[in-house]
Length: 219
Ligand code: NI
Image (cartoon, rainbow, N blue to C red; front, top):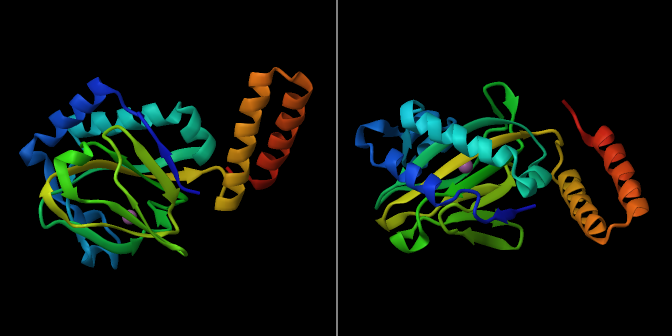
């Protein structure tokens, strides 16, 4: 399941992000954190995980962990890594698949949180390969796309301006993408039942949710 979530960050937080990206000396070659194969196709720059950049990625995690839609879609057990990346003209990240494990932890979901407005740069779409073709994603600043880490994907070359983003990897309580999608649908159904105020239906759905989480969840 792919899901786009709007307005994860507000104006003040986006301003803070821009302050991080203004620190010229705070960035390094992104190839250092790529796997062996991905390294060959990765051409971007990443913020060193210190100072303002570390504060900002901690803030991103804090916002996401309490975000209702993100929680329902990802069932996060924890964030494995959140990085700030930038692509300037000529930079791109060729087709690759994210590592199955990072720092000894299984990687289930990947996300890109866009930090610059789409009209300020050209190219730079996140391109996700699907059986039916390619899906191109370029969202407003503060919005996020979440997708299974098992997909092949790339970042198209930036030809003008600067693409800024926070990218992250999540370990989920639920290993399988299909199971996560079922639980997401169930969460939506629960939401509707709550709006309708049908107590018996809410309890029945909560019972199903509990059973599925016990069956599909790992810790
Ligand atoms: Ni990737």
